[in-house]
Length: 291
Image (cartoon, rainbow, N blue to C red):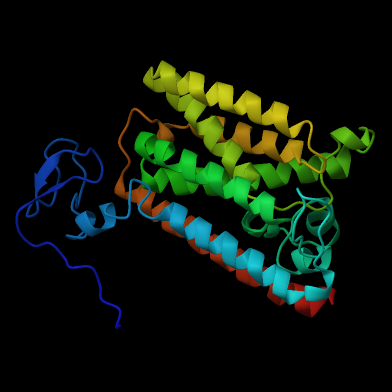
C-alpha cells in the first residue's frame, strides 16, 4: 500500500495546539493565547490523533526495540543470559559499538555523543521491558502537563544529564565504594524515565496539582528503593535524570503554567535530529576507530 500524507484541513475549526482552545482554521493567530499558526498548517488534527505526545512514545518504543534487536544480532555469539532476570543480554562489545556511555567512552575514547545514544540501548530483555513500560505510563502525563514538544526536550535533556552525572562520578569520585560508584559503561532509558519523574514533581508543585505531585514523589521513592536491591543499577544515572527533569521545569520556557509554543516543537525536532545523529555516529565511529 503506498504511503499517503495526512489530509490537510482547510475549512472549519480546530483546537489550538498551544492553548487547546477552539480556533478557526483560517486564523493565522490564536485569539486566546496569541500563538502563531495555531492549526500547524492545517495538520494539527491528524497529528493529535497520534496522542497527547504526538506519537513520541511510539518512536521511542520502536527505536529502542529495534536497537535492542540489532545489538543482539550484531554479535550473536556474545549474547548470554544470567538467570531469569537477565535474559538475552547483548554483548558488551556490541553495546560499546552502538553507543554505550560512561566514563570510559566519554573521557578515555572521546565519544561524547554517547550521552544521547546510550539512552536508546538496553542490557537485557527485562531492562528494555521495564523502561518501556514506565515511559508508556509517564509520557502521557508529562505531555498533558507540558505539551508534546516539551516532553521530547525533557526526555532528551535528562538522558544527557543522566549520562553526564554517572560518567563524571565514575571518572573523578574514585574513592567511593563500588556499590556507590558511577558507571564506566552505561546504557538504558531509565535516566529519561527519572527525568519524567522530576518533571512531574515540579509540575505538581508549580501547577498546584497535589495529586500529581504526591503520585510522582511516591513513584520516585519506590523506584529508588526497589532498584537498591537490584544489582548493576546505575543509581547516579537515575539521580542525574531526576535532577535534570526537576530543574528544567524551573526554567521560564518550561513553566507548565504556560502553554507550549511553536518554538518548543522546533526544539523537539532538533533534539530528535541530534539523537538520530548520535545513534548513527556511534556504530560508524565504533567500527572505524574501536575495532
